[in-house]
Image 1 (cartoon, helix red, strand yellow):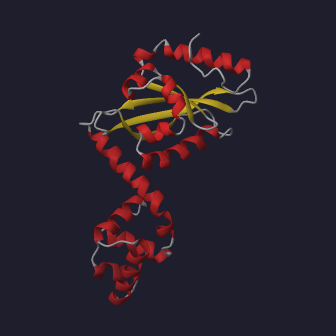
Image 2 (spheres, helix red, strand yellow):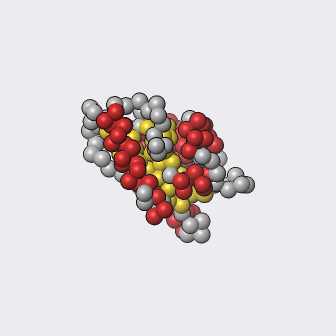
Image 3 (tube, one colour):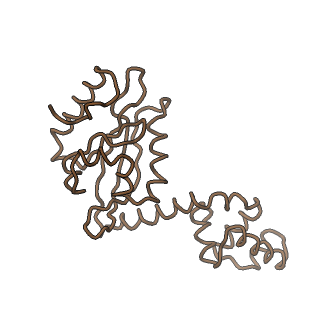
Length: 234
């Protein structure tokens, strides 16, 4: 019998048979598809990884299942995982949303030197339980050409996303006026222009700038630019 699902996978026999059939259909085309992964939506554990995936990671399907949560620690950038996994799980578990693809970038290490490679992945509900709740999800993972500009953009996008995650409270501490001023300061407008725009003195602008940098923990003007870019002010 094919090992598409663990023998002790917790679901009804009818749902189990449906899942086995659907995974078997996918597996028949595995050589023509990107790496695909079947997750248990309840805890996002991996229940099946296509042969191409196990080959790239240098592990067996049994290894992956036994790793549990360590699967992510072993092969993925931890900071990335902490950002996209909760968002992906929330999207997949939402019964009010129609089955649709949730896409994200992720860094995977498949090289002996431990270096990371960028992948564009997309997940969607795949099998539902008898109550109509998502039970299994399907994820396709397509490796990006490291020499393509998209890989570089993925790196910048992830860096901005992580900055958003790590600094949201700092940004939220800014007043409405401070956010308005940050936009113009980061854009490189002169003090004279900003003061004229907001009808404030140069001394008041310097005070606002000092307070903004303190709240954000910014040391340089470049830090202010990064904050403004990450929070879509410029």
